Length: 329
Image (cartoon, rainbow, N blue to C red; front, side, top):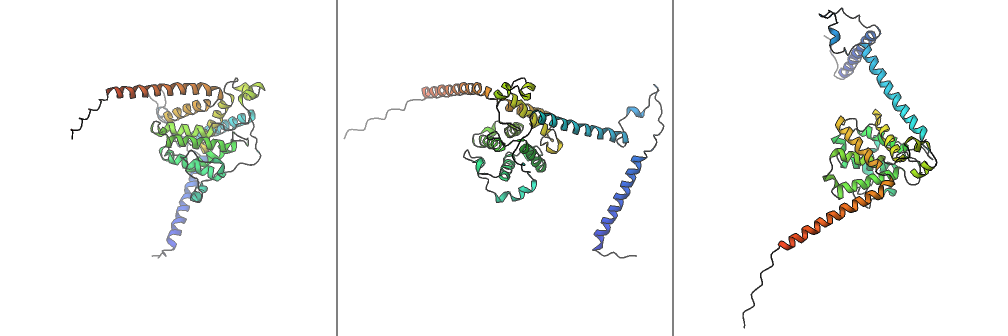
C-alpha cells in the first residue's frame, strides 16, 4: 500500500483531473473527426423514418456546424451594421477614448462622487473614471443590476463602446450624456418619479438618457438636411440625428459582449426598446415647443382641479361658533 503525503494530494487530484480532461478532449476530437455511422432505422407505416420525426440529436456534428455558421453570420451582420453606420457618419475624435474596466470598481471608495441625486451635482468636476463610477452608482441605486441580472463586466464593456462613439464635440459629448443621465436620476429620486415608473421603464429611461446623443457629429438636423448629407437622405429629413442615435444604441446593444439587455424577457425587451426609441426621438428640437405647450395645458388643468377642490372644501367648512360675551363685572 502506497502512502500519499497530504501535501501531494491536491497535486495528484489536479493531475488526475487534467488527465481525464485530456482523455475526454481526445475522445471529442476523435468523435468529431470520425463520427459514428448512423444506425439503421425502422420505417413507419407510411415508409418514413421514425427517428426523423423525433428531436434532433444534439451530438450530431451537423448541429454544431449549423450553430457555428449561425453565430458567425450574426457576427458578420453586426460588423456590417457598424460598418454601414460608421460609413454614413464616421467617428472623429482628437484622442483615443478611455476604456472602462470592472477593476475600477475596486477603487470606487477613493473617489468623491458627490450626491448623485442632487440638482447641484457638477459633471465638469469629475474625471472620466468618476463618470464611469457615477453611472454604475446610478444603475445600482435604481436596483437595475439585480433586477435584470446585468453583469458589471458587460456594463463596463457597454459604457466603453458608448463612450468610444461619443465624439469630441463641444456640447453633445459623453460628459453631456452623463449630465442628462444624472438629471434623470435626480427626477427619479427627488421628485417621486420612481414611484410611478416600473423597473423596465426606469431601465429604458436611464439608458435612453445615456445614449440619446451617441455619435453626434456636432451639426444639427437643419444643417444636415440643407447639405443633403447621406444621413439626412437615409432618414428622409425626419428626426435625422435622433433616428441615427437610436440605431447606434441598439447596434451596440445587439452585440453579446455589450448587451446589458440580454437577460430581459422578449416582452420586457420589446417594451424597453419601444420606450427608448420614443424617448430618443422626442429629443428632436422640433418636438420641443409642442411638448412644452402640452405640459402647460396639463399643469393648468391640474392647478384648476386643485383650486376647485380647495374652494369646495372651504364651502363645506362649518363656521366656528361665536364665543359668549364675558359676564359683566
